[in-house]
Length: 184
Image 1 (cartoon, helix red, strand yellow):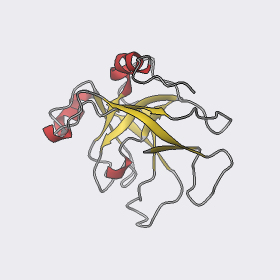
Image 2 (cartoon, rainbow, N blue to C red):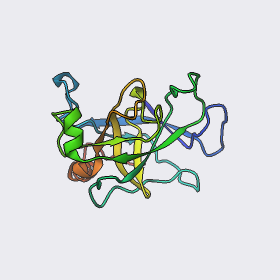
Image 3 (cartoon, one colour):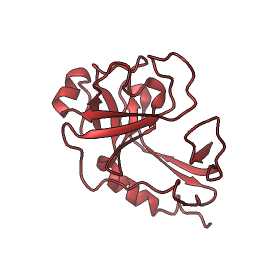
Image 4 (cartoon, rainbow, N blue to C red):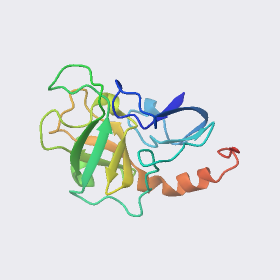
């Protein structure tokens, strides 16, 4: 498994692009996709070497508060858009808005505070099924990770995100653990 940074167009090799092997991965203990719902859909990775930061590659901040209803969230991913029906080589970006837990539960009764949902405003512009793990950002903070969406990238049906704020304690505890430590 590898992590690639600084890639915005698959046809262009930029000088700041880095591809680094993953040394260790830690999956959240609650993650069990066989249960029929997705709780704990989050993992931490430790890379074999440090990422070189620059003006194009830099860390994103972890959230300091939970998401609000109707919060605009920027989601990026590489999945083919339904409207164009052709391979995508450039990173796709959409803005979607969070909905209430009650609205999310009406579509997915098993959802709890570890997940938030969004809906988009234009058909075919929501996160797609293959965007899983991609970032959901608000004002420079990583608020969520794409967890589940429809294959058709629908916008009238909610899309689910792992709520990063809900997992901050687990993230912080494990980032400092001996398991995740590696000298660079």
